[in-house]
Length: 305
Image (cartoon, rainbow, N blue to C red; front, side, top):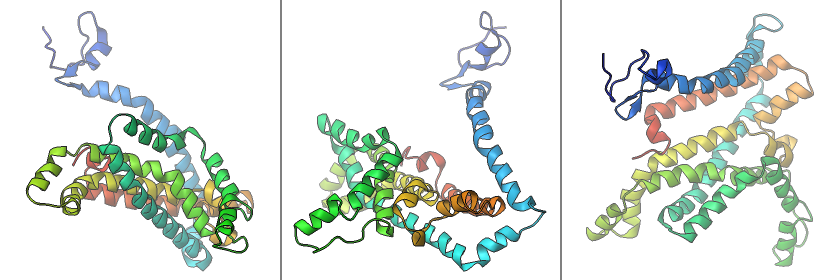
């Protein structure tokens, strides 16, 4: 029996064995067995490091001290926790909007640049990944303190006569989170813009469309998958952010991740903390499913228009 190059088989191939049969290509693609084998380590890590601990944690919210839903009732019935949830949503939405406003011009410039300029802009976008979130947050704490660089600059130009409260405010949290999460908005938008043929803009100009109309009717619709992808990444990440709000925010501006940490470390109330995790997980899952229904996954990741 002979085997062709474009036909996959799971039987041992001559001189290759069983694994050779698994990885034989079907045209330009691996066989199904080969794909599953390559994905196996990822799924093992996903189950062991994420799904199994999450299931165990969520089970605490239902089963301790006895089978009950009282912890979830406490989350939705207590106005203090409801305000924390709403504040978390509002801050995440504000950070996402700020990142989008800052990221789109940068991504557009990256997509249209060539040579050293493109390398320089890309390096500026990727550079924050070279340092930890803790270091970047600490740097913002130094800048925003009462005698920090920003306050001294405002007094030097006469905007204020004395230091103003910048640290431990919602504004500090929003700005620092936007700085940390900005690359997650820039890169998906850049990927979508790179896939737009330059001929479309030239054709629109030939047909009489100005730069603004070309952007509104050609560039923006085709870049929408990258915009949605970056928005989803930034918003869902901001919902569960912990380090930046904990260091730069005040107790009055507490977010849900900080509340969960407080319930575990200070109150030792694991069931209620698990219920908070369950509510956040449910909210994140719902948003992800809504986005996945609106757009295909490959388009959502900026893979094309």
